[in-house]
Amino acid sequence: MENTGHEEEGEDDVGFDSKEVKPLPLEGEADLDVDDDMSLELLAEGDSDDGENDADDDEEGEGEVDFDDKDDDTDEDTESFMKETDSNQDGMISLLELHQHADHELAGLDEHLEGDELADFQKDTAEDKSRMAKVFAEADLDKNSLIDGKELPAMLKAMDTADADEADEGEAAEDREDAKDAEDADQEDALEEKEEKELEEKEDADDEEDDADEDPESFMKEADINKDGMISLSELQQHADQDFLGEGLEGKELAAFQHDTAELKSRMAAIFAKADLDKNSLVDATELPAMLKVMDAADADMAEDGEDAVEEDAGEEGAEEEGEGEEEEDEEEEKEEEKEEGDSIAEQDERKQGGKHTLV
Image 1 (cartoon, rainbow, N blue to C red):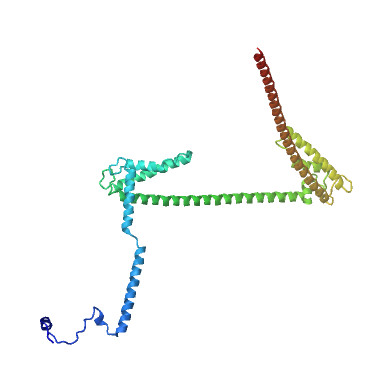
Image 2: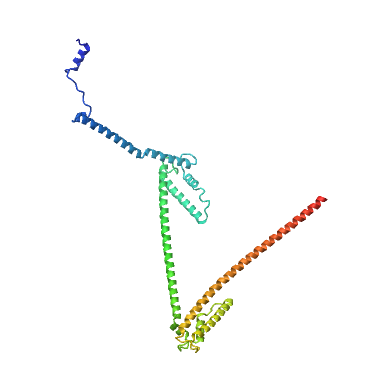
């Protein structure tokens, strides 16, 4: 078998014998001193791990903030504010334009405000404009009394900070006001509690005094003027006069008081007579407790009669007012009927006159 020229030239160029040539290992395979099967398994696991890491990277990328987008939003806000505020469209904002923009934002909010509320609104607006002027001056780096596109972001940021500080101060002021209101309420409650306690103490003292008056021994000492250890009807009525002086009363009130006092003394006389068991026209220490008990019952009955009289008077006054109201309604109805009758007569006369004209 002949060899071609190409084969001879190829054999001469290669320059090594015809032994079997093994392919060179790929990068990384030369370091693996393991069996072929194990090498395949490790390579497969490595590929799987790489896939998982890529997926994790993708998931992490989804949650990350795109600062470029955030900057775009800020730029859009700045541009929008410039367009809204720059009245003369010269690409810059003056303090006057800034104040006019604020007035436009607050327009209509004071329409329904009056008095103190309107004054507070105007005061807050003036304070806001004063803060704007200060922020404006700080943001105007070139001191040309204008805010250009480069200075505007810093000014807006400073304005946001000032608004946040104002909100915090407002909340702090509300907290202080609430604390003061709570403190005032506590003081008012304490004062009311103190007054109620003093009133209860006074009532208790009055009750103790009344109990002392009702005590037979104390009553005997007060009513027994001649100190003979017994009470006469005259002494009993004089004791009553001391309790019921009627000072400051005039006219009908004084007459009513005198009438009630006379009735009271009459009841006292009847009670005294019943309590005077030995009929010596005197009530001694043994007869006095029963007399005081009957007098207390009579006082209670008298108080109930007084309450009933007040309710009866109130009912009569209400009935009178209701009657007067009904009378007024009746009078109005009568007037309305008379008016209707007059209108009817006038209509009839007009018809008659109309008939005559027709005949003519």
